[in-house]
Image (cartoon, rainbow, N blue to C red; front, side):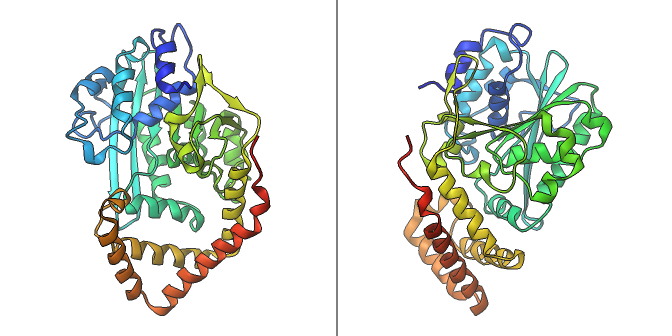
Length: 363
């Protein structure tokens, strides 16, 4: 089975002038935006460094605690060694975590030699704050990171007259779409394409708006066959189904997405298990008001933050002690908060039972 690393072997020796920018290139840039690039890539849009310099300066050992996926440093090294990306330069790196505003945001600009710039928005990291903000997509019309993405796009565009490409994986894809649909028309006209890789959609009010209609034909959404995250909320743009070798939520891992030659391997339909998860989630959310969803999120993350962990990845490392700490945090909740959590779990199980008919043998 072939993935992005095979794509780099197939297309890596061809410049963008020889072989045009493709969706897998957008996926690679989007994935590289997850790397912790502090003190390597300038925060300014006026200064930049080559991808090769970034690869040489990056230390996986020193950055180990902040690397979200173990293949990411390998992807950086492989991409930097390719002729296709040797003249790509990076600038404008930001990485912000604001617990008070419940905001996690990061972005970076990839400058191509044909005077185009790819603005890559990072998805959710392992922090509690990042995941709490993601949950709030179900209660809030606008997230702090979405407004920050719009501000970032406007700032990045002022430093150049280049044509623009936007993209991101997971929440990053949602941020790319949000910033594109909400920027002013003159800036919007400079955007050639927006790439959303398994990122959530929006509430129906956004999808039906004129501002979304203006970018719909430039929006390119890709989801794996059992997509969970990418099918959250509403989508009105067309989306392509990419074959993944992963199971269930692990299909969110782009290193499991299948490629052949210069493009993804596409499928005609999503799996029944994917429909089951999405229908169950939709049914669960429909059973709750916005106020009940907010109460559930607050109670859930109060318990999670009661663990001895700094982020989700640490919880399994000391499972027994962290579980005990979370149980103590649960007992400290007031009666109404415990009731909300209990009712929410019951509604989730009820929704799953209602959608069991979705599960059949996937052919």
